[in-house]
Length: 110
Image (cartoon, rainbow, N blue to C red; front, side):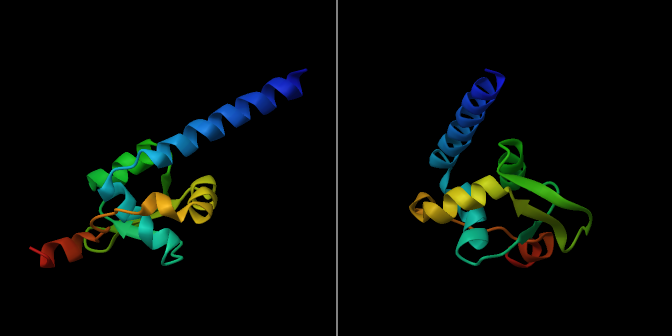
């Protein structure tokens, strides 16, 4: 009985996670494009990056290493469940805008 309940709970969690990927903003989609289309494992942005912080809070990305710096940023990786779902449903990234940038890239883009 416990296994049935755990399986049901796991499916509910997966469904909720997947629904989150269906509700991304265009800018959030832009941050995920390098992971899927570019097959990148890590994206580097500043720790204060608001878009990445939002993706992290939603459980879509995670901080890959505690080491980073103010110019090159910190490595953020895509959660395995999100990569798997987005690779199977790349249309979810249609309509993206923007892209992740390191703090140094942001400085030079102004």
